[in-house]
Image 1 (cartoon, rainbow, N blue to C red):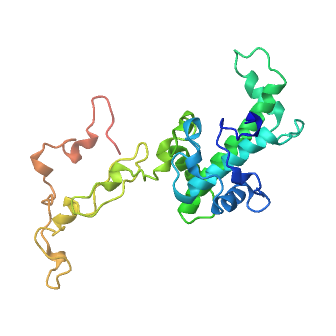
Image 2: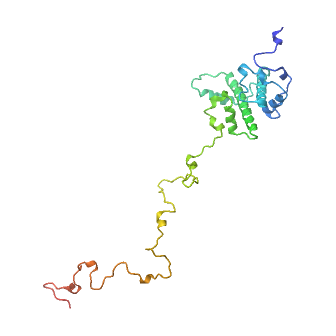
Length: 267
């Protein structure tokens, strides 16, 4: 047999895909892959060996959709003609990132082109995986959590663990421990921040309020109480007496103008 007429076994390539139409005008790569996957193109069983991880973490129809995308990508790279002047990503930006590595001394002309195509395939696959997660949750809006969940389903994306942590995919609600502690009365009280220099004020039911201000045992506002006849708190000082038994401070007021020797008495 002529070896050139035999199907290539270097990568999985189904014979049914030769006449299939991969139309990206309706739904992009995801819509085109879904249309071909529904017709039974490129089953996942063909992907073994180094290609077994292209659908890692996916099941059912989503597994076939991503498998179909990779099949079409491989066919496009190996058989279609390419315009090396037209790229999805700017080559200048790729060169700038490559030159950021101090070990890179020189960059060939082909290297940025390969990086641009590789980044295009990587972004497309990651977007399809994130969109699959959004469809599984009955949503039509792509969120950051969808990307985090897509990264967590395959170990191929472990190198992005510093950029998108796996904790974002769990949707765990981080609550403040102070808010979850119940009060002594059984009702949980939220934690209130205390400003610097602010003193803790006593609660309304302080012991001072419990005293009642009974005014010596008498009820306030009683009709039979006449405070005009109340006894004075301190004894009044009688005329001619010194208060509290103290000696006179200035002596007798009559001798206030006592004459000194050599002075005339006042007229």
